[in-house]
Amino acid sequence: MAKYIFVTGGVTSSLGKGIIAASLAKLLQARGLRVTIQKLDPYINVDPGTLNPYEHGECFVTEDGAETDLDLGHYERFLNIFTSQANNVTTGRIYQTVINKERKGDYLGKTVQVIPHITDEIKRRMLLLGKEGNYDVVITEIGGTVGDIESLPFIEAVRQLQWELPEEDCVVVHLTLIPYLRAAKELKTKPTQHSVKMLSQEGVHPDIIVCRTEKPLTYELRRKIAQFCNVKTEAVIEAADAPTIYEVPLLMQRERLDWICLKKLGLQNVKEPDLQHWRAFLDKLKYPKSSVTIGLIGKYVELQDAYKSILESFVHAGSVNECKVNVVNVHSEHITYENAHEKLGHLDGLLVAPGFGLRGIDGKIVAIQYAREVGLPFFGICLGMQMAVIEYARNVLNIKNAHSTEMDPNTPDPVIDMMEEQKKITNLGGTMRLGSYPCDIKEGSLAHQIYGAANITERHRHRWEFNSKYTTAFEEAGLVLSGINPETGLVEIIELPKHPFFIGVQFHPELKSTVENPAPLFVHFIKAARCFNEKKSQMKPAQVLHA
Image 1 (spheres, rainbow, N blue to C red):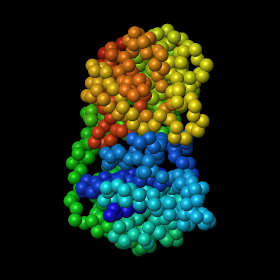
Image 2 (cartoon, one colour; image 1 turned 135 degrees about the vertical axis):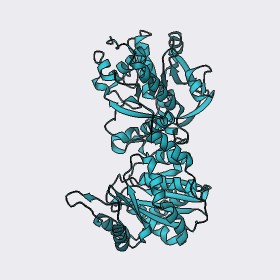
Image 3 (cartoon, rainbow, N blue to C red; image 1 turned 90 degrees about the vertical axis):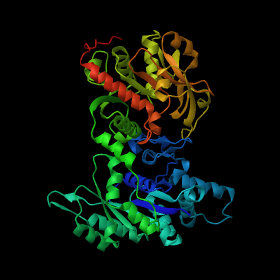
Image 4 (cartoon, rainbow, N blue to C red; image 1 turned 30 degrees about the vertical axis):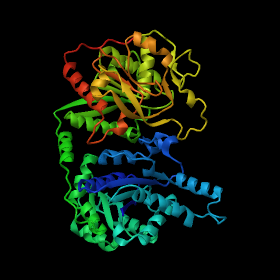
């Protein structure tokens, strides 16, 4: 039988429940236990696939094609395991399931209510991984904050499980905030007391309280929190601000969070955590031997969570290369042929990120032309690859009206076009090309050298594709179509063989990058950027681009 750990949050959102949950899972995994994590989100959207990134950050895609919360990316990066649709459940999906059952008559004419029908479905989802998966511990992160109206059914489900499950099979970890008042020069525990009181009023009694704080907690403060929140003093955990999220597992180990959980779950006869590889990764990350500056061109650069997986992939690749990666946001709307060198000349590499819509497209095309002509390492992901195809068509193939039908439905030269099966779709949610697909890589290509394999799989999330009608024209002009989907013939990877590093991919390699297995494309991109940085001082200034 699996054991269950529930992670709730109070006082304020964005305290880092996902990182605490992932860190605890990492420590338990390092002890030899089989662990998984799931996220239960209180919003009514069925999934985050139709949410604006400014609303909810990145939409993370799993191997099985589920559009999920970005915290699942943290789970995969920390645990080095794949998650699935079962690891992320929203209120919308819960209600959708219950309503579908009601329509089929499964409730035999009974009045369908939040309690018991909605809470029963929530409990079923909470226990599902433990019953069907081969896990020792299942960690469930409850989204939102205690006291939110939309979170009430989830908290009630936890209350019922805390009563139904054997005492040694269930632990509740509550993450809260201990603010530091600079005027008074002291930490305040009252918000935590109120948060725990609110949780207790809903019938859920936390076993462990994790306190986010920017100042160390004294023993007296811990004892005060324990006394007024009805937990043991050893169960009050300090979660201090850390320079990187990857230090949090070590901080939680020092605070003995994993040991306390194991003690309450009756799993004390397990080995000490083996974090040798994790510490080696951190050493390289904290003590780099060089640094590079990468320009990130995207539509949502004001919100860092919109490109969370890309930014974390840079961290992983930087550690492998023992190189500090400084990522600077580049607003493509401000890039022109005349100022391209001024805006981009200080960079060691350029990444054009995924996105949708017309805004900033012309600037992205100019930036890609600059990278191609001056030898600046370039990496395009999804929309970034498509913009590279358009740039090459216009400036090398001399197809001046080349475009994507996403931005210009009436273009006479749609070098990027919507897939035929996508043209018939009217509903936007969960209908893109999603999840893992195979790719055959051309031997002798840069992609083949990077992956060290002729057959790979990567995750996708898009509707538009390279238009295969233009294949011959591009190949004759020197663009190598080095990755092809063997089942559909769709182009997955493009590259320029005579460029230091110029590669675009239709898929999203950032979604599979983890601490233990960094994405190969990111690793080689940073390596190329480091080489470019070393040679840059010997290069002549770039010339102004011309349309």
